[in-house]
Length: 107
Length: 305
Length: 113
Image 1 (cartoon, chains in turn purple, yellow, blue):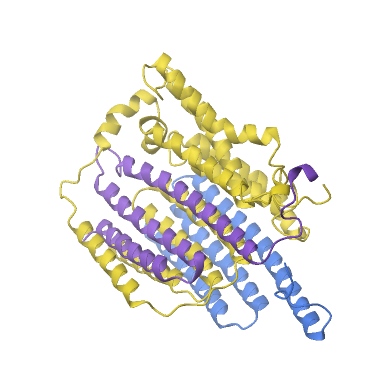
Image 2: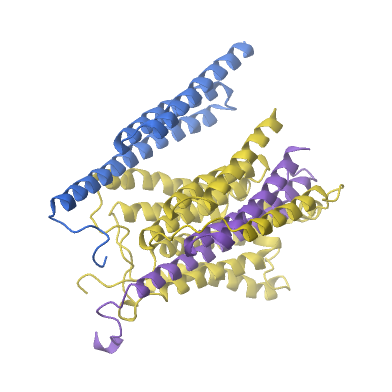
């Protein structure tokens, strides 16, 4: 049981927590957070795989790490877009604003 | 000894994740998430992934945290549902399946490190992760830049029709307080220097375009919070040029790769390092501006036209 | 000699951790937000200073040591400014709450934002 295996197992448990948050959270914000926790757990498993692939003078296999960096940025994009949608949805539900429906030519 | 530290860190990580998904109220969950992101960054340091640790802390915990905190203000708290046993069962199942997979990973661990080590000297880079990101898997990075741009367009598209080309709402409705302005004026130049350093040193040591872009975006947000700059108009052509510099520059290098190296996204032989650095500078500028604008949100009603 | 240096490091880092623990205790046990901010800021700054002091002899070079001191200075700057901004927000909320009680202003959740 090395430290790397511990991190892999922790990633597996984090993914489980994320799935629970995704399924049972109240409201969109909780689900978005659950999705992020799930992503973090999966990335940690990638990290364990990368660390085990240390060879050729590198301390870890760089290819999975580069994939995780891409994944973190894409997950942030998805989170930001989902949050913007959520906020706009709440605004719409709260009632129309006085200038909604005005056409651009009227400005 | 280090096994003890790793075990303690894993326990804290699991406790943090449980805190996020079982928190009472959205704001507590978001604050727990920001702390959990920092711990995740520490875990990456222990896994010898320093570039990933920098990205996780800067983007995964830092900028995501800012976007989440802004959203929490606008979204009313939803009532907490009772524990759902089916969801708990499913999540335990997922965790168990993944754990079995982790414990059953093949013993001579398969790795691409040898291929990377063989091909890296041709690119004149010292950091293998930067090499993978910008040379060997450059297509992924190009598509990732486009995804960033798409997310920004999606966020902008959520504005009301009359305010489409206006400025995004400022980060707070009151004028910036004096400590905020002081912090912005003192910290932003230091942050700019650190961001540029991260970009430059990313060629040979942990760092690179994404980490640098995140730090520069954070400095931009700091200046906005301190009232030192105004959110720009989304229709401004200079802004759109900055946004497009990264993806278009990368695409241009990609297409010219057919002429110079015979393959899409190939670098001209003998000129790899200068072209890589030029591409990195272009992407960093785009990433910084895109991240900053994504946090600001859709353009809203203009003050005074 | 190096045993002395290691002992110094251990002592300073342990003292720094103790300060952090005290700050966290203050965060959990104090009742007022302003007191919590005060306790946390003071304890964290001093704790970080002790940890940096303890790690300075272990630094690989003078430049590394200077970087650690720079980290401490930046952390002090940021936490000082942030504590002030948070305190102002807390005071503004308290004034607002008092005004609502007196009946001068409407509560934040009543009208459209």
